[in-house]
Image (tube, rainbow, N blue to C red):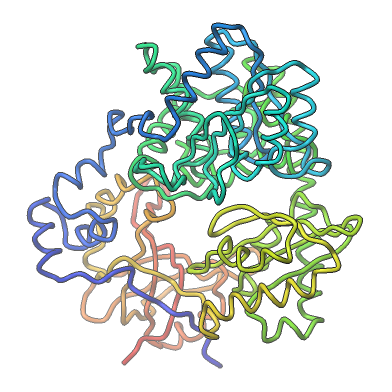
Length: 575
């Protein structure tokens, strides 16, 4: 039997044993947990308490955001003059939750307002010509853009010409600031706000908080929308550190205490078990369904399901969204297979550092998901494009360590437009420029990596022995939640592991590995599950020593609780 392919493993950080031991003693915790805290930039017991027990007063002052005072002044003026205000947002989770939050806020404080979500296919991403026309034709004198607007200078100039002021609330990286009345964006170079990682919905939330602070009013109404802020924060893959961690913490409390009718129906359709919701549920159960509305039909339906307080309306709209979600899943599967077939048949991809694909007829609403799927098979920055009437448009997804926004910037001459973040972006180009752009993008990544092809690398927090695994350790790491980028679930390494007795294949396809293993040098035995790792069953039952990367789960069976390993990767032990 050949040895299964092995991935690279790397410790997330290196610290002296003395530093870790000192924090463990001062914090009255284990050295393993102290090292996990060190990796999250926590050095003192005081920092540990602040991190592990978030408080509502840890929210930063919203007026620390550049132009917040101008935005509030303009909103106050609009309210006094009874102006019509249009809330304009993107069609994804971040944009639609932001619109639901801000529109509800304006209605609550008495504005004459409406909301607008662009059509993904007719208008595309960002502030559109159709949106400007809608505002002008319907006599809106103020527009608030959410999760978009920072790269839409021409449309904002058009608004100015119509006598319409624009307040931009965005979190995408600006290059040239648009001529808006106010620009609230933590990524502005001249903005000193500490948290640069706010999602678009959170930026809108901060404006709402600033309004109530300005009027010396309670923030209770604003805090009632932390559930939607949490959904957007989790789905937009922003760092779960500092203020974002606090937003998620209290957002999860809100969503587990007060279910909106629409959220409740989305979860029912997702067959949620009824357990307490965690970030993973926001990201994999709720967010895909909110996204599905904009991907398949219209993001307006997502806003409507989030806004409604009527149970019957919520049930009806959520059922419609679930149909879109099921359609999205089918498209995802079929387009992914077509994309894999293209890769296999084109020799360019054998030596390329990137994957850049196009096809007429693909559904634009799922190309971002398809790009992520392709990275699972081919670990490269990936672009999937849809061709329509001589124009290619689509989505980019990246891998660790490669900023695709920066890579696209190096190829800007071949593009009509682009925008996004380090790990995900959108773009548009002429079909005739496809091959030139594909080569330029590949060369940009190749040069950035010094012609060394990136390989998938599993990071782990700390190495432990099996006899260190206990309910005390498991319970000590629970306050690290909520998890997400820069605060992922702790990953442990244990070495020199052998089969104890009952390791076997399980699952309908016999492709999962159920482990019952022991470690050289101690008497503890552990059970675990390794999904999609059937190739390791023979080396293990033949007595080969292995190393494991894993996370800890609680397993309840017949009323009895035990700690189980959720294995992420396996390799043969190094002698």
